[in-house]
Length: 317
Image (cartoon, rainbow, N blue to C red; front, side, top):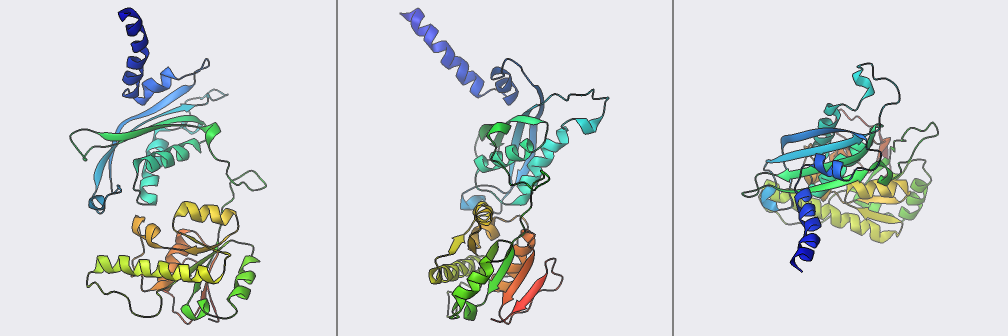
Protein backbone atom coordinates (compact mmCIF):
# COMPACT_ATOMS: atom_id res chain seq x y z
CA UNK A 1 0.00 0.00 0.00
CA UNK A 2 2.74 2.45 0.96
CA UNK A 3 4.76 1.53 -2.15
CA UNK A 4 1.72 2.15 -4.34
CA UNK A 5 1.14 5.51 -2.66
CA UNK A 6 4.79 6.43 -3.18
CA UNK A 7 4.60 5.51 -6.87
CA UNK A 8 1.51 7.66 -7.32
CA UNK A 9 3.04 10.61 -5.46
CA UNK A 10 6.22 10.78 -7.52
CA UNK A 11 4.65 12.41 -10.60
CA UNK A 12 3.05 15.05 -8.39
CA UNK A 13 6.39 15.73 -6.70
CA UNK A 14 8.05 16.00 -10.10
CA UNK A 15 5.32 18.39 -11.30
CA UNK A 16 5.79 20.64 -8.27
CA UNK A 17 9.56 20.68 -8.74
CA UNK A 18 9.15 21.46 -12.40
CA UNK A 19 6.61 24.22 -11.69
CA UNK A 20 9.24 26.17 -9.75
CA UNK A 21 12.08 25.32 -12.10
CA UNK A 22 13.56 27.79 -14.55
CA UNK A 23 11.64 28.04 -17.85
CA UNK A 24 14.64 26.42 -19.54
CA UNK A 25 13.94 23.20 -17.61
CA UNK A 26 10.25 23.38 -18.43
CA UNK A 27 11.07 23.82 -22.10
CA UNK A 28 13.30 20.75 -22.03
CA UNK A 29 10.69 18.69 -20.16
CA UNK A 30 7.93 19.55 -22.65
CA UNK A 31 10.04 19.22 -25.79
CA UNK A 32 8.74 16.96 -28.54
CA UNK A 33 10.49 14.17 -30.37
CA UNK A 34 12.18 16.74 -32.61
CA UNK A 35 13.51 19.30 -30.08
CA UNK A 36 14.20 22.84 -31.25
CA UNK A 37 17.07 25.16 -30.50
CA UNK A 38 16.51 27.48 -27.53
CA UNK A 39 17.76 30.88 -26.48
CA UNK A 40 17.19 32.37 -23.05
CA UNK A 41 17.26 35.55 -21.04
CA UNK A 42 17.87 34.89 -17.34
CA UNK A 43 17.25 37.10 -14.30
CA UNK A 44 16.64 40.26 -16.35
CA UNK A 45 15.60 42.90 -13.77
CA UNK A 46 13.92 46.19 -14.71
CA UNK A 47 11.91 48.81 -12.85
CA UNK A 48 8.34 49.61 -13.88
CA UNK A 49 5.15 51.26 -12.70
CA UNK A 50 2.72 48.32 -12.68
CA UNK A 51 -0.05 47.01 -10.47
CA UNK A 52 -3.81 47.00 -9.96
CA UNK A 53 -3.77 48.55 -6.48
CA UNK A 54 -3.92 52.29 -5.98
CA UNK A 55 -0.81 52.29 -3.76
CA UNK A 56 1.17 50.82 -6.67
CA UNK A 57 0.39 53.71 -9.01
CA UNK A 58 3.15 56.24 -9.43
CA UNK A 59 5.66 53.91 -7.75
CA UNK A 60 8.23 51.86 -9.61
CA UNK A 61 8.98 48.32 -8.49
CA UNK A 62 11.46 45.73 -9.64
CA UNK A 63 10.37 43.06 -12.10
CA UNK A 64 12.45 39.99 -12.91
CA UNK A 65 12.06 38.31 -16.30
CA UNK A 66 13.15 34.82 -17.27
CA UNK A 67 12.40 34.06 -20.89
CA UNK A 68 13.12 31.02 -23.05
CA UNK A 69 12.36 31.01 -26.77
CA UNK A 70 12.34 27.91 -28.94
CA UNK A 71 13.49 28.85 -32.43
CA UNK A 72 13.27 27.28 -35.85
CA UNK A 73 16.70 26.08 -37.05
CA UNK A 74 18.00 28.20 -39.89
CA UNK A 75 17.99 26.22 -43.18
CA UNK A 76 21.27 27.67 -44.41
CA UNK A 77 24.69 27.88 -42.73
CA UNK A 78 24.79 30.80 -40.30
CA UNK A 79 28.24 31.90 -41.47
CA UNK A 80 28.58 33.64 -38.09
CA UNK A 81 26.06 36.27 -39.27
CA UNK A 82 24.08 37.87 -36.41
CA UNK A 83 21.32 38.93 -38.83
CA UNK A 84 20.36 35.29 -39.38
CA UNK A 85 19.52 34.52 -35.76
CA UNK A 86 17.03 35.75 -33.15
CA UNK A 87 19.21 38.03 -31.05
CA UNK A 88 19.06 38.12 -27.25
CA UNK A 89 18.60 41.86 -27.64
CA UNK A 90 15.24 41.27 -29.35
CA UNK A 91 13.92 39.62 -26.18
CA UNK A 92 15.07 42.49 -23.98
CA UNK A 93 13.68 44.98 -26.50
CA UNK A 94 10.31 43.21 -26.47
CA UNK A 95 10.15 43.65 -22.69
CA UNK A 96 11.14 47.30 -22.86
CA UNK A 97 8.73 48.05 -25.70
CA UNK A 98 5.73 46.62 -23.83
CA UNK A 99 6.62 48.43 -20.61
CA UNK A 100 6.91 51.69 -22.57
CA UNK A 101 3.68 51.21 -24.54
CA UNK A 102 1.26 51.65 -21.62
CA UNK A 103 0.92 51.22 -17.89
CA UNK A 104 -0.46 47.77 -17.06
CA UNK A 105 -2.27 46.43 -14.02
CA UNK A 106 -1.50 42.73 -14.36
CA UNK A 107 1.67 40.70 -14.78
CA UNK A 108 -0.46 38.28 -16.81
CA UNK A 109 -1.16 40.99 -19.37
CA UNK A 110 2.50 41.98 -19.53
CA UNK A 111 3.61 38.37 -20.01
CA UNK A 112 1.05 37.90 -22.80
CA UNK A 113 2.18 41.04 -24.62
CA UNK A 114 5.87 40.14 -24.33
CA UNK A 115 5.21 36.62 -25.63
CA UNK A 116 3.13 37.95 -28.53
CA UNK A 117 5.86 40.41 -29.52
CA UNK A 118 8.55 37.72 -29.37
CA UNK A 119 6.46 35.30 -31.43
CA UNK A 120 6.15 37.95 -34.14
CA UNK A 121 9.83 37.26 -34.88
CA UNK A 122 10.07 34.83 -37.83
CA UNK A 123 12.42 32.41 -36.05
CA UNK A 124 10.42 32.13 -32.80
CA UNK A 125 8.17 29.08 -32.41
CA UNK A 126 7.39 28.87 -28.68
CA UNK A 127 7.98 31.29 -25.79
CA UNK A 128 8.18 30.66 -22.04
CA UNK A 129 7.80 33.94 -20.13
CA UNK A 130 8.11 34.22 -16.35
CA UNK A 131 7.61 37.65 -14.73
CA UNK A 132 8.04 38.24 -10.99
CA UNK A 133 7.52 41.21 -8.69
CA UNK A 134 10.43 41.45 -6.27
CA UNK A 135 9.22 44.24 -3.96
CA UNK A 136 5.70 43.14 -2.96
CA UNK A 137 6.67 40.87 -0.08
CA UNK A 138 9.42 38.76 1.43
CA UNK A 139 9.53 36.55 -1.67
CA UNK A 140 8.94 36.85 -5.39
CA UNK A 141 5.37 36.98 -6.70
CA UNK A 142 4.93 36.11 -10.33
CA UNK A 143 3.31 34.39 -13.27
CA UNK A 144 4.60 32.14 -16.02
CA UNK A 145 3.02 31.47 -19.40
CA UNK A 146 3.82 29.36 -22.44
CA UNK A 147 2.67 30.48 -25.86
CA UNK A 148 3.29 29.00 -29.30
CA UNK A 149 3.24 30.51 -32.75
CA UNK A 150 0.37 28.24 -33.81
CA UNK A 151 -1.81 29.67 -31.04
CA UNK A 152 -1.32 33.31 -31.98
CA UNK A 153 -4.28 35.17 -33.47
CA UNK A 154 -4.20 35.77 -37.21
CA UNK A 155 -3.14 39.31 -38.07
CA UNK A 156 -4.82 41.32 -40.83
CA UNK A 157 -2.45 41.31 -43.80
CA UNK A 158 -2.09 43.35 -46.94
CA UNK A 159 -2.14 41.92 -50.45
CA UNK A 160 1.65 41.54 -50.47
CA UNK A 161 1.55 39.50 -47.27
CA UNK A 162 2.76 42.26 -44.96
CA UNK A 163 0.78 43.32 -41.91
CA UNK A 164 -1.63 46.12 -42.79
CA UNK A 165 -1.60 49.11 -40.47
CA UNK A 166 -4.94 50.70 -39.60
CA UNK A 167 -5.03 54.50 -39.63
CA UNK A 168 -8.38 55.71 -38.27
CA UNK A 169 -10.18 59.02 -38.67
CA UNK A 170 -10.49 60.70 -35.27
CA UNK A 171 -13.46 63.07 -35.04
CA UNK A 172 -14.03 65.57 -32.23
CA UNK A 173 -17.67 66.50 -31.62
CA UNK A 174 -18.39 69.61 -29.56
CA UNK A 175 -21.61 69.54 -27.53
CA UNK A 176 -23.66 71.44 -30.16
CA UNK A 177 -22.63 68.76 -32.69
CA UNK A 178 -23.75 66.00 -30.31
CA UNK A 179 -27.15 67.70 -29.95
CA UNK A 180 -27.50 68.63 -33.64
CA UNK A 181 -30.66 67.31 -35.31
CA UNK A 182 -28.60 65.98 -38.24
CA UNK A 183 -26.35 63.78 -36.05
CA UNK A 184 -27.62 60.58 -37.67
CA UNK A 185 -26.83 61.90 -41.14
CA UNK A 186 -23.32 62.91 -40.04
CA UNK A 187 -22.70 59.44 -38.65
CA UNK A 188 -23.92 57.87 -41.88
CA UNK A 189 -21.44 60.00 -43.80
CA UNK A 190 -18.65 58.98 -41.42
CA UNK A 191 -19.52 55.30 -41.89
CA UNK A 192 -18.96 55.72 -45.62
CA UNK A 193 -15.36 56.83 -45.14
CA UNK A 194 -12.64 54.34 -46.15
CA UNK A 195 -11.01 54.42 -42.70
CA UNK A 196 -12.59 53.48 -39.35
CA UNK A 197 -13.94 56.34 -37.24
CA UNK A 198 -13.27 57.18 -33.60
CA UNK A 199 -15.47 59.87 -32.07
CA UNK A 200 -14.19 61.95 -29.16
CA UNK A 201 -16.07 64.42 -26.99
CA UNK A 202 -15.29 66.95 -24.29
CA UNK A 203 -16.78 67.90 -20.97
CA UNK A 204 -20.55 68.11 -20.75
CA UNK A 205 -22.25 71.46 -20.27
CA UNK A 206 -23.11 72.49 -16.73
CA UNK A 207 -21.29 72.40 -13.39
CA UNK A 208 -19.15 69.51 -12.17
CA UNK A 209 -17.40 68.84 -8.84
CA UNK A 210 -14.35 71.01 -8.09
CA UNK A 211 -11.94 69.09 -5.87
CA UNK A 212 -9.18 71.70 -5.61
CA UNK A 213 -6.67 68.88 -6.19
CA UNK A 214 -5.06 68.63 -9.63
CA UNK A 215 -4.68 64.83 -9.64
CA UNK A 216 -8.19 64.22 -8.33
CA UNK A 217 -9.69 66.81 -10.67
CA UNK A 218 -8.06 65.06 -13.63
CA UNK A 219 -9.95 61.88 -12.77
CA UNK A 220 -13.21 63.76 -12.22
CA UNK A 221 -12.94 65.49 -15.58
CA UNK A 222 -12.07 62.27 -17.42
CA UNK A 223 -15.12 60.58 -15.90
CA UNK A 224 -17.25 63.57 -16.90
CA UNK A 225 -16.03 63.17 -20.49
CA UNK A 226 -17.02 59.51 -20.35
CA UNK A 227 -20.52 60.50 -19.23
CA UNK A 228 -20.71 62.74 -22.28
CA UNK A 229 -19.52 59.83 -24.44
CA UNK A 230 -22.39 57.70 -23.18
CA UNK A 231 -24.79 60.57 -23.84
CA UNK A 232 -23.62 60.60 -27.47
CA UNK A 233 -23.98 56.82 -27.75
CA UNK A 234 -27.53 57.05 -26.44
CA UNK A 235 -28.45 59.26 -29.40
CA UNK A 236 -27.51 56.63 -32.02
CA UNK A 237 -27.30 52.88 -31.48
CA UNK A 238 -24.48 52.56 -34.03
CA UNK A 239 -22.10 54.23 -31.56
CA UNK A 240 -20.06 51.86 -29.36
CA UNK A 241 -18.30 53.27 -26.27
CA UNK A 242 -14.84 51.71 -25.74
CA UNK A 243 -12.22 52.31 -23.08
CA UNK A 244 -9.19 50.11 -23.89
CA UNK A 245 -6.72 49.88 -26.76
CA UNK A 246 -7.73 46.25 -27.34
CA UNK A 247 -11.37 47.27 -27.70
CA UNK A 248 -10.40 50.06 -30.10
CA UNK A 249 -8.36 47.70 -32.28
CA UNK A 250 -11.19 45.14 -32.39
CA UNK A 251 -13.85 47.76 -33.13
CA UNK A 252 -11.73 49.29 -35.92
CA UNK A 253 -11.30 45.92 -37.59
CA UNK A 254 -15.07 45.38 -37.43
CA UNK A 255 -15.88 48.85 -38.77
CA UNK A 256 -17.84 50.02 -35.75
CA UNK A 257 -18.38 53.71 -34.94
CA UNK A 258 -16.25 54.10 -31.83
CA UNK A 259 -16.87 56.60 -29.05
CA UNK A 260 -13.77 56.94 -26.88
CA UNK A 261 -14.06 56.77 -23.09
CA UNK A 262 -10.61 58.15 -22.20
CA UNK A 263 -9.98 57.38 -18.49
CA UNK A 264 -8.17 54.05 -18.72
CA UNK A 265 -5.95 54.78 -21.72
CA UNK A 266 -4.99 58.24 -20.43
CA UNK A 267 -4.29 57.13 -16.85
CA UNK A 268 -2.37 54.04 -17.97
CA UNK A 269 -0.28 55.83 -20.61
CA UNK A 270 3.46 55.91 -19.95
CA UNK A 271 3.74 59.16 -21.94
CA UNK A 272 0.25 60.59 -21.51
CA UNK A 273 -1.20 63.91 -22.67
CA UNK A 274 0.38 66.93 -21.03
CA UNK A 275 -2.77 69.06 -21.20
CA UNK A 276 -5.68 68.89 -18.77
CA UNK A 277 -8.79 66.92 -19.79
CA UNK A 278 -10.68 70.20 -19.99
CA UNK A 279 -8.71 70.86 -23.21
CA UNK A 280 -10.74 68.29 -25.13
CA UNK A 281 -9.25 69.03 -28.55
CA UNK A 282 -5.71 68.53 -27.22
CA UNK A 283 -6.90 65.21 -25.78
CA UNK A 284 -8.40 64.20 -29.14
CA UNK A 285 -5.16 65.20 -30.89
CA UNK A 286 -3.12 63.11 -28.45
CA UNK A 287 -5.28 60.08 -29.24
CA UNK A 288 -4.97 60.75 -32.99
CA UNK A 289 -1.18 60.92 -32.76
CA UNK A 290 -1.02 57.83 -30.53
CA UNK A 291 -3.03 55.82 -33.07
CA UNK A 292 -1.23 57.34 -36.10
CA UNK A 293 -4.59 58.56 -37.36
CA UNK A 294 -5.06 59.57 -40.97
CA UNK A 295 -6.78 62.80 -39.93
CA UNK A 296 -8.42 64.68 -37.06
CA UNK A 297 -11.76 66.32 -37.87
CA UNK A 298 -13.07 68.97 -35.47
CA UNK A 299 -16.77 69.74 -35.42
CA UNK A 300 -16.80 72.96 -33.43
CA UNK A 301 -15.10 76.33 -33.02
CA UNK A 302 -12.04 74.99 -31.20
CA UNK A 303 -8.36 75.87 -31.52
CA UNK A 304 -5.76 73.17 -32.08
CA UNK A 305 -2.38 72.99 -30.30
CA UNK A 306 0.55 73.93 -32.53
CA UNK A 307 2.86 71.28 -33.94
CA UNK A 308 0.30 68.60 -34.75
CA UNK A 309 1.73 65.47 -36.37
CA UNK A 310 -1.72 64.59 -37.75
CA UNK A 311 -3.57 66.57 -40.45
CA UNK A 312 -6.40 68.61 -38.89
CA UNK A 313 -9.61 69.73 -40.59
CA UNK A 314 -12.23 72.09 -39.12
CA UNK A 315 -15.86 71.37 -39.98
CA UNK A 316 -19.14 73.15 -39.12
CA UNK A 317 -20.27 72.28 -35.66
